[in-house]
Image 1: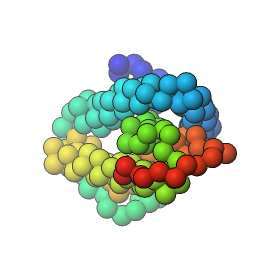
Image 2: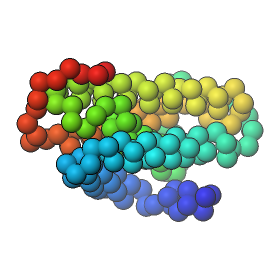
Image 3: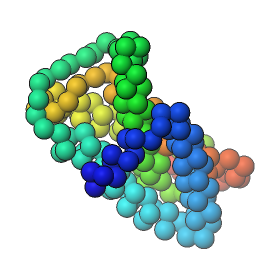
Image 4: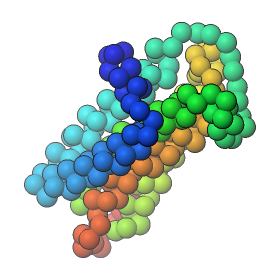
Length: 187
């Protein structure tokens, strides 16, 4: 498992955002096609993907780290300032974005049925997904600080939220050009 994460971490920095874009497009199209054939399968696949995403996030951020020193950085965009001196900080920022993309890809599909038609329902689901991701990210940063498992940074929360937003785009892309039905939103 550690080797897989090492390979992902070594992705050249200029390729990370295009890879995210391709994954989002493929996932969105795959879920749209699958929803036509078997809406239930969309929920099952995304439950499995969400479980894997949460496991990966917790493994990378909490469980694989050894205790060190407590470091708290609350100034937003401090990583960009540091990146001028240390170019590796750009990679760390992008990896934090990439880390939460799977959460954004799967959680909205788990929270709502794929056939829900109202745009307001879709937007509520997207907002709820972002709020859950922010809460998860803040909780992870608090655990990292409390147990000295890594730097506790505001920029990590911002990067994780951006990654979740990129993932949510796959959910929203699924509905482009689809006719909406009047339904009650379960969320």
